[in-house]
Length: 216
Image 1 (spheres, rainbow, N blue to C red):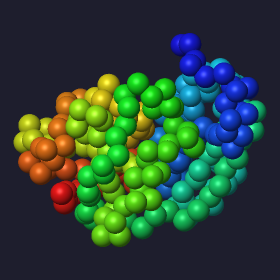
Image 2: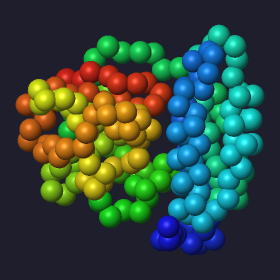
Image 3: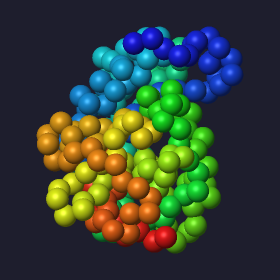
Image 4: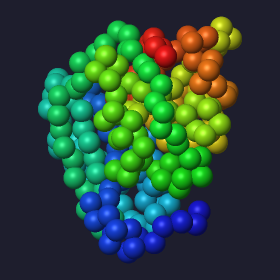
């Protein structure tokens, strides 16, 4: 896989750039650890940098406490330096209120191939989110549904669970990958104007699948 990035140039332009993995510690295990490490390695390969996966796993395990669920944020700088920050697990919510952002994603943006700190559209959409919402949905220029600001979008037209195709322009979500590989959902295009016609869900590896209500 040939990287569109020059790591030295990227470091000069954005010295704080890092790959990110956000994991859930259940109190007994690191949920979906293998999938997170594979995505981290894939991101490092895409950028042409090195990452020590053994050290990453050791740091994650060292940050956990027995029987206390936690949110773990693993970052890998361009230098290969790793850091783990632990925080409380987000409180669970039964149903999220979801709106539609007027900001769009570009399917050809190379940063959508990796999970990193460089996410200007996602961050801006979340920053401008009205307080009554829990999440905002992003589309591409063709009004195809892509992603949530911190979640993957899932939907059901009455024929089983679906998620937008990667070609629409979205990040490689871990929950999405797991559900696709297990046959729990399939890829299908959803247009923004049809959001009110489907049963909507959002989710990520940390929070799992969450039912959502769409408010135009």
